Image 1 (tube, rainbow, N blue to C red):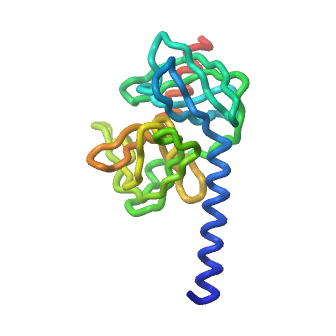
Image 2 (cartoon, rainbow, N blue to C red; image 1 turned 135 degrees about the vertical axis):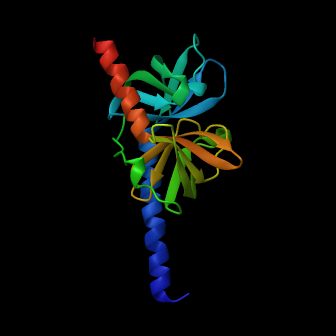
Image 3 (tube, rainbow, N blue to C red; image 1 turned 90 degrees about the horizontal axis):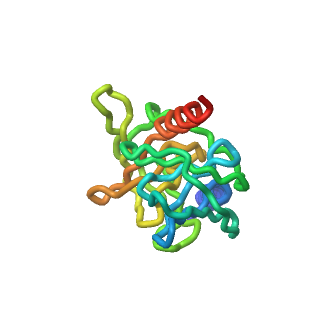
Length: 198
């Protein structure tokens, strides 16, 4: 390996380390009752957490772990069709992840999934975008990526190489990771908060 290649490899490694640290600060572990855990994204900088609806058992106590401290949370809204849930966690804060329009994603683009798979805290997996599926109205429905996900990744962020949020990891289908587009999550949060304010 020549010196320029070594320097380039170190630069990439440094960028990924910075990305991992950003995501560590922007996510929480979510527990619903005594069931297994999932991941949630601190939304809007403070007080709100977005996760998957399938991570939340209705009628059970909710807790989120941010920075090694467990805190009580409560569900504000669900959208089972998009597999999204919005939680209130007033004492939780973290950096605001910039959102990226899923329309700009291209097949083969590098993405990263962050979460707590199989009890492994703050795990980062790298993969590439496979496709963006669409609904009947031609709107983005799912982001499909060749990235390794496992139980505990659900509700965690899928980001691009610049740390912009492109989706919320939801499931594995035929070995590929499937995420809800961040734009749908934003619409869900805005609608939930406007309904509560009405």
